[in-house]
Amino acid sequence: MTQPIVFMLDVAPADAPEPEGGWAATVHRVPDGQPSLMATELSATRGDGVFETLGVIDGFAQAVDGHFWRLANSAQLLELPAPNLEQWRAAMQIAAAALPTDRQGGVKLVLSRGVEGSGVPTGWLIATTTSGDFPSRRDGWKVVTLDRGYRHDLSEKAPWLLPGAKTLSYAVNMAALREAARRGADNAIFISSDDYVMEAPQSTVLLRRGNTLITPKTDIGILPGTTQLSVFAVAGEWGFATEDRLVAASDLFDSDGVWLLSSVMLATPITEIDGRAIAVDRDLTDRLNDALLARRE
Image (cartoon, rainbow, N blue to C red; front, side, top):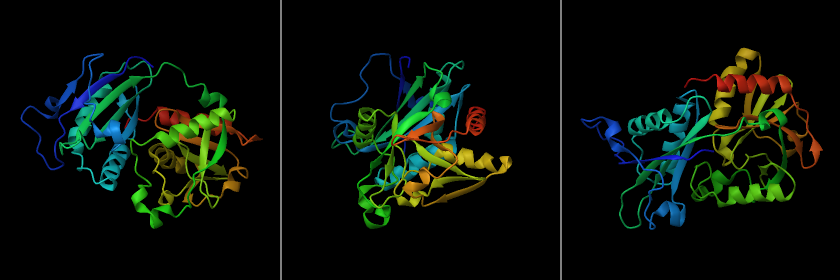
């Protein structure tokens, strides 16, 4: 990736009216190489914050409403001040406009509890441009399954563990990717301790069985997938039924295709799971990525 572009935000309360100078006046680009955060910032010392990453294609941020809903939901789960979504929308547009349009990019939105003891939240955005052509969309990934360490009904039994919130506490997710690499794989899929498919460290799982596209339901402690929602929105036009339900781990091997979906990588086909070959639906993979690349909202 090229040098990231950072914007700091004067975080406004959710019900604050737009200032006279417009929301753009509350967004400040940080000069390259200049420090942006205090060392006592709770996002850095405790991972106490939430984030979203939006893909940007041809200057257009993707699945904006879905990402903003998830940002607000994550903030509510962490009992952070509700974000002013109009302010964040304006900031996101400024960040996306700073990226070149000849390559795919992304904008990361971060809302933190702020500097310890201040009681004032911190917000910032990071705009980046990708440097590759995403060969994984063509070649696919080998994945391993990893035990998530809890049952699929965690949300009901232990909501204080924040299942379904996209928090900055990503150490477990990154450790899972390192473990996958140690096992000779490209990525991982988390499985609940009672053998249900959950999600990948940075992606949503999608399966095809016959004429139906399936994704794990989100009330098992996983994030609702914004890219998956875009896929389901067009699936009916292609003659597919869609389901979100409990997915047994064994279903991964009894399918007509498995993909990992994410905002920047889009649809990556899975070629192997735990050393077992998985059928790759090349035609549907191409259709998925073409449709996702064509989005303009």
